[in-house]
Length: 244
Image 1 (cartoon, rainbow, N blue to C red):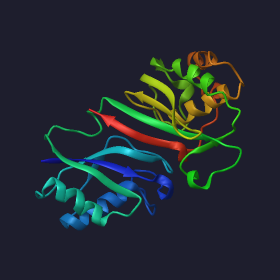
Image 2: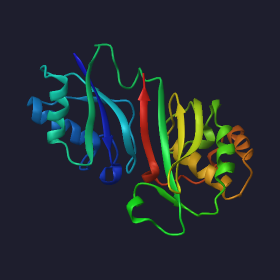
Image 3: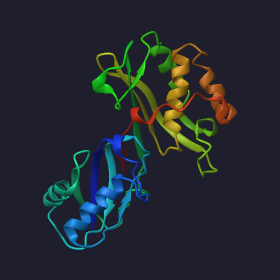
Image 4: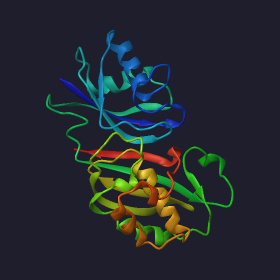
């Protein structure tokens, strides 16, 4: 028997998803809650590990419960032991061959930003402030060049342990999500370390007219990190959903 959990969390006060010694993590809090429920260690397996400061609306985890508890009670029981900044929004029983990580087909991330001449306190730690003179339409045009299968060597942190940088982006667009608030939505089959944040930094350069939208295509073709923009801050990034 396996249980699939969908998590929502505010990553502000976490050192990321994965358990780390002497640091507060999402996995650590989740497995601590499961230990309280089942009175034994219960390992969890995630669709992907988010970095420190990154948020999630639909992170997926699975685990094998030592004993059966009704799905609704699982959700309520876990939430009773979780802190306010991470909660289970859905729990369901899945087939024994389900795997949160290896069976995922698509992931959608969003990078949230807002246009303002000053910081907005209620968006602090939730979205990136950008100047009001930014060209959103140019950023949208630049994002189109990311769609398709590419070597994203220009959009991966040097800290990545990966050697294969080929990934497929199904869609990349910027949408208005509130008054002067926008989100870059990127859907793909998988993502490299800091890929979305580097994409965001590059599109900001386009928006500030440092180079035209078609330069994004040239940056892709060069396959070298030094040609892309700066890595945008973690606090604007959200894992939106994982599809199977």
